[in-house]
Image (cartoon, rainbow, N blue to C red):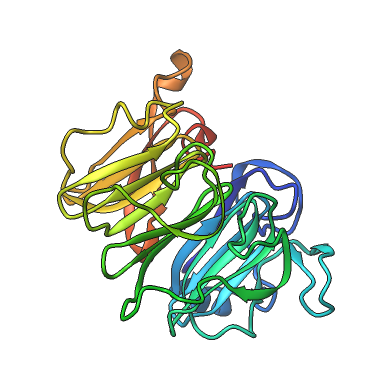
Length: 306
């Protein structure tokens, strides 16, 4: 029997637990059309990825459907009224978009990549988050008009206010708030997709923190952006044998082939004696891979993405 649980900040109902109250303990997530065990099992059996933004959460299923909870925008009337679902559960969204293969969430915006390699954005953002030279879009708008020819999207990640997309030729493009250099040089707000230069290797994956981006290739890796949490100066000298990568507000995580996780950034050192106890937490990584995460201290110290 499959169950999905969530906890943390929930002022916009982004946890999908039937309330907009914050919670420090895991609560069962609810789906609009299920409310019965068989349908919940069917949905979670298709689970591919969970993406947490600032005021919204996206769930991507293997069949390309996307469910969301939290703040949304009225795309039926063409305005930008923020809608807060009074039921605070996960709903099937974006039926006007074809099958989705990647999704990411920012503070109040979403980015989707469809199976025909189109990239769309929707939501709100004043620092280039939509990649379309607009601050607010109530309808889905295509971000890339001329992606690299003959390529496919192989990865997508968003932080608080910037997004990075990786193509099959190893090139990385990004848009949004790049004032800390997280989108390369020049360090500035990037309103439309811009190629990230100077990495010096073919990029395979990327993950975004608040003010940095971590890039990984076959045998090289790099961090661009702020070093406020020592994410740049503490980077391992060599790339570990990795299965998956992740990032939070100020930390970077690597799931290794041997099942262990290494991390660096704002999650260390522990703040006090009570926070020095390691706790094992089951978690789902991108593309549905399961793993065991060792978390130090309070959950938000590791997963304080926003």
